[in-house]
Image (cartoon, rainbow, N blue to C red):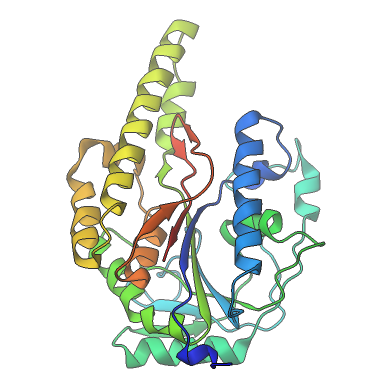
Length: 298
């Protein structure tokens, strides 16, 4: 049997992660998003050769907090706890969410090897110690439940902070070769993520105004989701890269991503993928201000 290093590259995934409400709020859209993630989890568990680790990029782990916006951070902590790092305060309404856990494996030695690889590839990087943010553990809790656990370690790597979108693709390109060495790259974000639009809907003064605003935001979200899918349809890596970067010029981009931290993991995934088809996975779910696109590259 050939070694994993001599096998073809493992695929790359981008998943729409949602917030902690995905775990307990009952809605048809939530059920669809959950089912999509479960199927992706099954697909990952069935991969052959088996990955030796998952390298995860999340919309909730950006560079900048410790070493500056241009220095990538690699988590090398052993026995990483999960972080209850929610946007909303659930202590009064849903206090049980702070009891959620997701048992998992980590591998500081492998994480250190990723850090060294980034430096050798010309990416400035530092080792840090932190917990697992909800952009990772919320979707993974659905994808890898107790009866079908993820039995390989996760390695958390940050994205860059800020609006230099091209740098995110270069980050992905820097780790592209790791896919030939048994590392599975998973990026977790959202193809549309706009709390500003949600706030606009909530601030409407009348039901009629709220309906009109919601419909407008939904149209914008669907339009950008379609534009993004069009950019991803390029199987040539250079053409796909150019198409993704041009999205920033569209009026829907700023409406769909007032801040870019949930978009940048997708760029990392695209950079890591290289040439090859991008396959949207599952049933499409687009809401006013949010889209839950999932993609497998390769």
